[in-house]
Amino acid sequence: MNIFLKSLVSITAIALLAGCQTALQLHDANQQLTSYYYAKNQVTDDPAMRETAIASLRDLGKASAAAARKTKDPLNKISFYRIAATAAGQADDPAVLEYAGEGSKVCEKHWSEAPRDCGMLTFIDDIAAVDETTAEFNRVSNSESPTAQQAQKIFENYEASAKNMIAGFETLATSVPAEMLTVYSKRIDDLVCISIGNNARGLVNQTEGDINAKCRFNNLWFEAMEAEITLSKCPQSGAPTAAQNC
Image 1: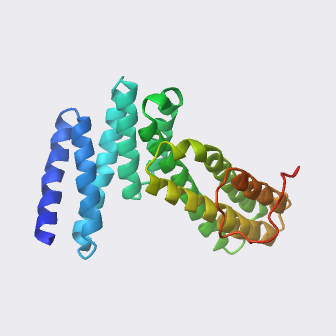
Image 2: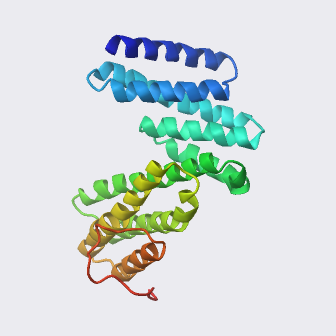
């Protein structure tokens, strides 16, 4: 298996280098994404090969984003951005937010023409934004003296992501594969109940911030219930019965 995977990575790396010399084709980009993704997740026992696959994913993201910006066809733009964002996300490249955001802007006018790719871009954009806020929460919470302003910003960033994800849940239900929707639902559960209800609220209380955090958390909880999103990690008693004026 390792010999096959090493050959696979070498072949696809050559293909990507060739793509740098000529215009990257959508079909080739899709094939490379599949190959690099497969290689990355199959060489867990070979750190060097895994890093090679990750580097290839990062390069594919850059190349696909460049192709998206150059093409005038909106559907091709969306497809290239979907590849770019997926590749960057798999490579833990911070550019994932840039690629997904640019693709989502194109989707604002063309969602009905490419619902699956647009749904996946929205999914990636939302998840990446939450992960970025979590990284900031970890940094701030581990610092010696977090401030009320930092805590408020983290709470508000999480809150904005939660509202966006809850509001778009129904649309995504008809756009992305079922397994992705399951992941998305679980991420909303984690976001509302753990990241906001426990972590962000705790940081706000620790820094003695006064932003009506409990009321705002309850409203997110209520919005999720209204959207029929299961929040299994929130307390099973004391659920809000209506939105409150915070």
